[in-house]
Image 1 (spheres, one colour):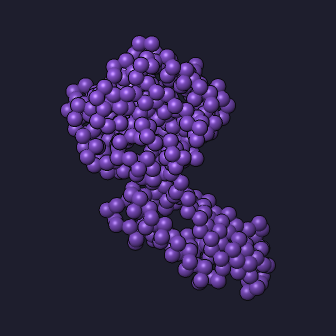
Image 2 (cartoon, rainbow, N blue to C red):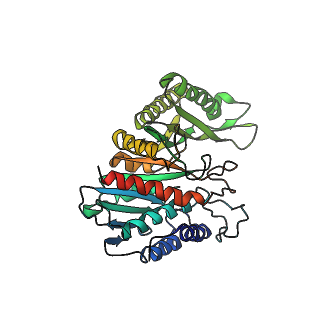
Image 3 (spheres, one colour):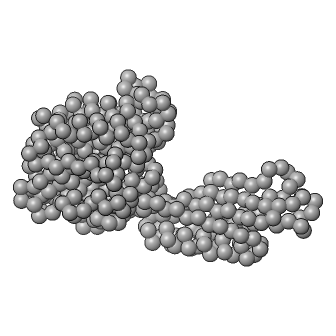
Length: 384
């Protein structure tokens, strides 16, 4: 197979869009990716399907004079969203859609892999087709299950995320944090139920929960540096069954977002302190569960990101913008905590939709523009 053309990449993207699959269930997507990859020039390629993560794919390209192994990651899973685009290549899987643009991500990766399979790079290159980004912490699973070992261990890692707010093909990036880290919060208050007319015989968890919720609102305003950014949202509270019975149990569910891992750990500790205080004050059990999983802040490596930005800024064929951090999560942050690297945006020109929306319809011109910009950067990187 020759290097994939723009029309070829668009056809691949449309087929991938038709077959979206949820986290760790990407069997059809995995098989199609392997079929495409097996059509590339195999002279420099080693393809591995790790037993530890069977819907993942690793592709190693042997460099001509390797000084390092450059990793490139793309995610392959989809979301439980019913598509409403009316495109002729809409999802064939009911209730599942590439509403986050991972079909675009995969197509760009295949375009890069196609090019470097025909044009041997100077350095080794590792392409990681990663399952389970949207849930199940696929990046963390890959790392903890040891798939990045030996020749499959990258010295640095790069990856993109599509951005419908930016014009098609625009590259966006920033030094520091690109995506926030997230922590899921579950709080169970356990007291004693009773009749509404006899509160002295009960231990009301609703009152305690109300006090806790109000105290949690002070964490960001009084425990976090005001020039930094953090968010705590408590989106779900469940208690009681009827109006005249005091609730003996209350559950609060929410999420934390922070721009650095240090900030998230600081917020986590303040929540522990507040829950312990409420437990003592109201003489009840307060069980706090904090689950960060693999969704750490995407903190770009300073030196590598500065190189990336300088290249994109100085390339007249690239439209580059410096972007602000987003409070959305991305599990590439876990891998960037283990390997130095950079994540960046690829504009897909759909300002009327948002990521994770049922109407997301990326401009397909972004695919080849993305391939060309990233290909140029990687060639330049291997020259330094």
